[in-house]
Amino acid sequence: MYQNFEVKITPLTRTRQIRIYLPNKYEEDVTRRYQVLYMHDGQNLYKDEDAGYGRSWRIGDYLDQNELDLIVVGIDCNEGLMRLDECCPWKSNEMTEVFSAGRQSIGGEGKEYIEFIVHELKPMIDEKYRTLQDETSMAGISMGGLISTYAVCVYPHVFKRAASISSAYWFNQKEIEELIQVSDLSKVERFYLDIGTKENTESINDLTYINSNRRIYHLLKEKVQDCRFEIVEGAVHNELAWIERVPQIFGFLYK
Image: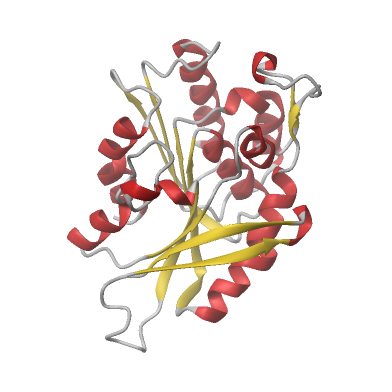
């Protein structure tokens, strides 16, 4: 079952579509409460007709078929380079070739975006739906993986499980490594990371992605209770590759 509504991101003074997946049994047993997973790029999660590139992750179908009882909160992304602004916690000068003429950097709105999720969206979801408020996770791909890792570091008591898929850590490599090193992640139960061997995008080559993610994994595995890192042979940077990894991602987070 799906529900959609629009919210205001107060710190950034803009609105956004929220897409909710509810388990099939949600309305049958009104006493049961559920874990919640927050995911970025919400338009790409459930239905092909909503997806930006015509192919969704079909996460709702997977959860239904496997009877995995979980509430998923999908947050639509912003358009174009503004998506990168929201997903980068710090300003970055990477990939200057995609900047418009008036830009000197990209990113820097990630802090406000995560504050919106923690202080505005999560309380709204916890009030509106029957959630287990202390069992909350976050997942994202590419830049969504970067901002999910940031969120876990800043709010480890909130996001106790996370998945970071094909993450573009290189946008803020130095800053995210330094943040992980000073963060107390002892309350984080599980953290999943992966990267494909053919994930070159724009001017960024495969090895940059792999080495960037490997460095983050080596930092996280010393701090997180259960940390898993997969290098996926032949996987590229697109929805078709990510769909294939849905079972192992959810299997690890909620086994």
